[in-house]
Length: 487
Image 1 (cartoon, helix red, strand yellow):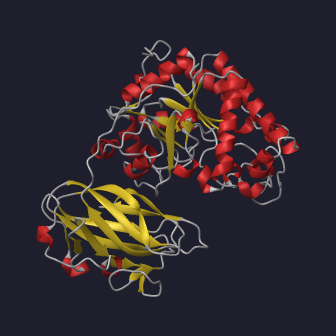
Image 2: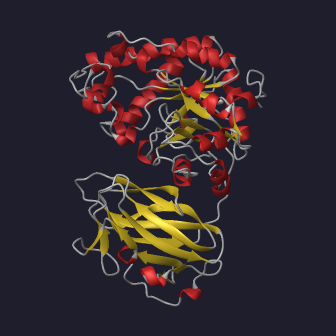
Image 3: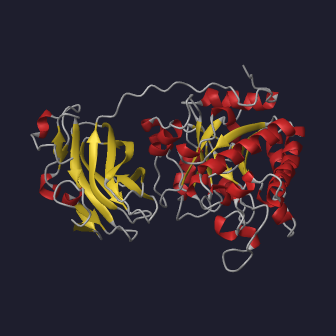
């Protein structure tokens, strides 16, 4: 970055020009060779952070550090001559022993996305995201989420042209049942036109009833969990009605999605306060070693792994017999490492995904599953032969309604063929108007239980807007999916 020279921004090759408010932040550096503008963090308005020169490799006269409190931010005042999308890249660093960190970008008070900085110990570009800037002055804020990163600069350039091929309604399971094919065809038909609403069922607060009372609508997709069918929970008295709930929802014309917070097959720590048996899906609550288990197929651990899969197959078979196709999303958020199936890295998790796929589809003959992968990192992708739809789980700050287009773009990047991309879990609701503006055409969203009930996270006005929006499909707007044309 130090090789770029500062020139008159009037020659910059955007539609007209990008200018940073000179009174507050000084002029940007124009990288004429690459058609980019570089804004140095040390020239931004700083809140709770400070300028440093300790870490080598920074551009300009320093960098900004100390993102450790929730309100910490660097505020750039950006002026542009016309409404439009721009490509934002962020140059930052994280200590090698900290692990990667995710932090947020806000534009004019609305969350534009999040960026992940790998723990290399060196300044590097943390990917790119498409942002929308209004004509005139804009606030571009880099704000602490996880924190613990150093910010060197932000870079703006024209976004590349985007041509999005449509996903084809072809399933990985060649023997998928008619109902499964009909559902996949419908989802593909809606791509780029509508987004389906979804809600993870909460049994404690009856999230569906609360949503209906506030919005007058019910979600098209009911999210459920196989968690309490895990054998190490069943053996301790856990019970579930999720399968019965799924059948009832299908009979009402709705769509069913299942995840599986898989309690580890063996070796639960079962100690207070945060390692009790019912939290055995967390890596910290079990000593179950997936990598070693997969290497020793004669071990008790491997047999327990297969036992668990077979028990879940029993439940999925009940759904198949009842004519319920399932948006099936196991082994979610693996790359985060907080669940035991991701604690040993991508290679072991990919092996487990393929084992799970083969055993459920080939051994148990389950052909009612649409396989939704939400591993959150390309390194963890199990391959196009084992995935039908990509999911991204996005938890933005409270009431930070956006399109989450950066994560949508990330979801598109995993596969070698066009895929539907779903907002498979969300805390804050997506804004349908911004989804359309940013062409972030999520196939569906599914708000996690607890977030729709809490007005501090999603205010009632936004709930009403989303569930009554012309772009959002609710339960009453679904077609007859039992007789939908599959070709």
